Length: 392
Image (cartoon, rainbow, N blue to C red; front, side, top):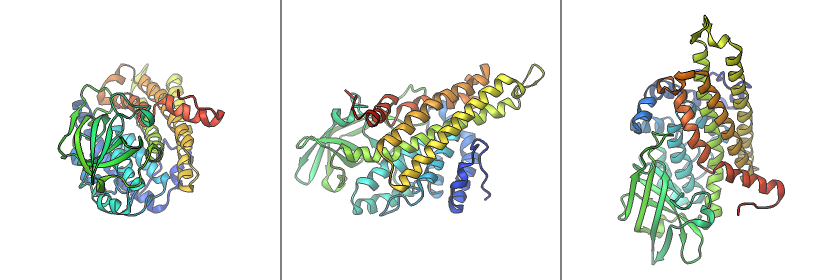
């Protein structure tokens, strides 16, 4: 299958990939374009998830790009970023599903689990036999999770008893396991647990009425005396620093998704500009339309350069929290501008789902907020700049 650079990759960053990575990305792109793009608007409109894509994505390796049985990073971080980009340029909901499965859920096990836990869970998750979710955010604890986590874990012999609640947990209405982060009542430290969702006392309820990422099945989770064995406690997750380690690895890929979402809106706008006739010619021939497209491409190109470098730093072992935080805060801000300009180009048609741009415009709001709000990522970078923490 022939690999072609995206026109929206104006400086050709995809040329950095190896031939093997280009082939894998070409196969993924072909599936997304032929099988996923035609169905996503309907699922988004109905707020339903397209379960028929789960196994084909597994066969394409979408849940094993980052992790193998006993070691992380089987592929370059730049390649994994382009995977997130390709998914988001078709549908951010699909990108979010894959990011939760491959990044947050499998990533938690890979980064903080024991070798035995990695061997037990990751192969089946990579094949799509087990779907995972990631339970950190709570109804009363979002940005302050490091200090304000209210879900508790109490040791009882060889078991742990979990009590509390979680909110906005993606994949959680149909996940087989959820990674639950809870505060150990004995030492006050945050620990992680692999919780099968059929465990008594575990309840997940779908959150309805969303205007963004409507195909993502977010849930409220209630934990009432949920008993989890010590065997399912993530053995190397002993404080929130370990939770943050997982988030640092995935936050950069959310930045890639933001670039992909921008590209999806931009590509829709370019196609529309070449076909929509006003004042006797295609609107792409008008100066103000070209201005919107050029500003959008500038945002995309600048953001793409940033995320490529951040991912290279991850491969080099030099990436720190502030690096991924700056990428998240910058790319999602530029995404908000870009999708607004692209929606503007469509005029009244820009609010109709059939033209795609409305979906990218709406989905941008969720990408802007999750995996660290704009404000929190700004404070992470600000602390590095000034040497002073301004979180409270």
